[in-house]
Length: 376
Ligand SMILES: Nc1ncnc2c1ncn2[C@@H]1O[C@H](COP(=O)(O)OP(=O)(O)O)[C@@H](O)[C@H]1O
Ligand SMILES: [Mg+2]
Image (cartoon, rainbow, N blue to C red; front, side, top):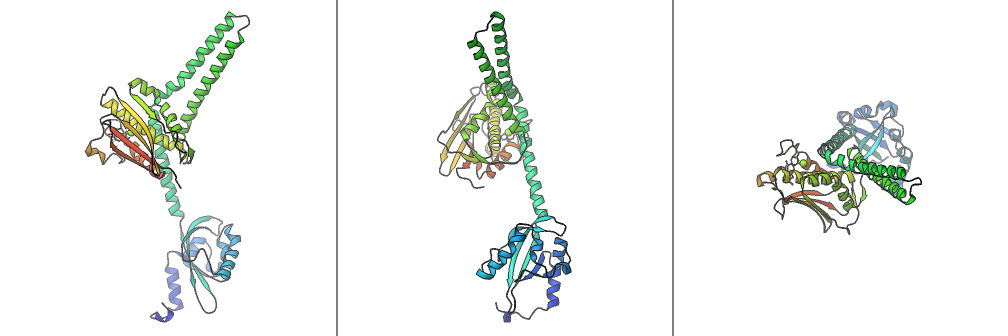
């Protein structure tokens, strides 16, 4: 469209009215980056009056490092005609008069005129949106944390047992050592050595359990790094040792040693597994089954790895299958119904998913798929 296609030229005062009615901040600068116009919304956003900033370099509104780099951007555009920013909005940081920095969406357009080039920047303050996103993130984190605490509460007996066992062993070694000392004027070096060695081993084992628990109990931000999934699963299953013995349920893990390291949040993957295994244990126990069995299998399938928790419990009725992953869906008298919905969102945050199907051993199979290569 050329200028002559316009039905009529828009007067200066009409442009003023438009600028001041705009909800977004609008700033017009010349080719030297000097501010020519600064609308009402810009005044409110940045805290300057138009008179204060007119004629000033627009970098006044940018924190470092862009403050210092901006002259270079403009110069490069003058020389190459290439501006990274023109024509596409991007998120940048702005600087208010009072020194506060804030996230903003900036889009820049060019107004070609015969005498001098003008650029118009349209700016939206993203602070509120970011604050809302942060709030949602915090709530999600709290929910994940709460779920871990609930599960740990349910596993308390097993955890206590896991810590108690090495402590009992240490006490027994100490007693044995005492007896040897009592019986011998010069205690045999070899035996004492052995006892000290075992005591050290057992206390390290107890410390490791505590360490693992502290990780699970800790609330904190997600931190993904490369992990061996087999190892994560082994560590998780240790939490169930006692429960498994108590209930006589057989739990078998089939690792896939050839699996490459995956980029995951260790605690969150543990959380999925703990939830799935606990659900299987609950399902088998509630059905009053003897010969209960749980299998954990891993396999690679194209670009993903599939981790399945398979049980021979009662399975899920067709009517309930659609609701399984809904928040607060539970069939247990004391259930909360958040486990599977949380597992599903953790999977999604890892670029994967979680599905249910009937298992070949007539109960449930929950399969977590995770991409082998994840960028996120
Ligand atoms: N392995 C399973 N076998 C049978 N039913 C299951 C299994 N896992 C989950 N479910 C069903 O899904 C429901 C929701 O599970 P979940 O979200 O973990 O919440 P909760 O365990 O608190 O009930 C359970 O109440 C149960 O009815
Ligand atoms: Mg559950």
